[in-house]
Image (cartoon, rainbow, N blue to C red; front, side, top):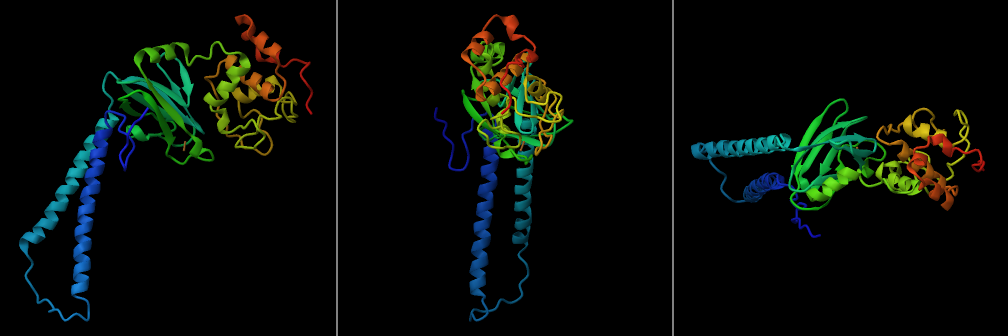
Amino acid sequence: MEREGSFWLPPQSSTTAHEIDALFYFIIIVSVIIQIGVTYYMVKYAWKYRRRSHADRPVDVHPNKWLEISWVVIPSLLVFVVFFWGFKAFVSAGIAPDNAYQIHVTGKKWLWEFEYPNGTTSVEDLYVPVGEPIELIMTSTDVLHSFFVPEFRVKHDAIPNRYTTVWFEVKEEGTYQVLCTEYCGTAHSEMYAYVHAVDRGTFNEWLRTGGGNDNLPLNELGASLYDKAGCQTCHSVDGVSGTGPTWQGLWQAARPGSEEGVADANYIRTSIVNPNAYITEGYEGIMPAYPNLTDRDINGLIAYIREINGDWTAADSAAAAAPADSLAAPADSLATPDAEPAE
Ligand code: CUA
């Protein structure tokens, strides 16, 4: 899909982008014209009246009344134009149309979480219907974040203990990058998300299935959640230490001080549900809670951690694919005593 931006700016992919851009260009062009004029006369007279010039020194003159008036009135008018134009764009960007579709957005270190009116949630992937006004009701669980979609010309802070709103209407289907533009700590620069603008039918289908993880085997569900729920921001699976401990070698590793003593299923479950229950030595207790993960999601993450540590077999996948009641088994059923001892 080709979306053409200009030399200066990304494509205008929302219905309000052109107004912001027009104001931007107006300010740039006026500034450049004034800059060229001022610089021209400054250089010209600096040369003409340099100390050793033989040019006549000017005699005292009475100020030119119209010149004086013009350089007061014209810049003042320009400033008023910029103010009212900017104010109008600011207000229209801040007040959503009455029929806007509302989605809650939560910024947390370091991911974006989205909650739709029917209870469906997603992390780092915001699905919206194309051609309809979307209002985002934003907040943060920890520090200031800022939700920025360059192609929509939409940027607004997400503030803890407070709601802020912003809206947009996407003009064409596609995927658009979301950035965090408020420095919020270690993984600020990785706090990405994507807006997926799709047609109404696709959107309804996506909403109904909640992103469509229902039928995945547990280990694949976990692998998908590792990206979608934002775990990968802090936890690597290749042994590299991030903001949080790597998951490589985690399964059944010694965890002195915890109730379980080792990183078994109960330990991992507790660490997801109540992240500050145990803090691994050498790390800070900065992980947010994930109240939107279901039991099955947590089972999936445990399965994925087992898988990357070589403790997940095809038989486990088959068992996980068995009837629904076995999927709903409590997490501790995975903490089987026959699990491999820690190395
Ligand atoms: Cu969140 Cu920067």
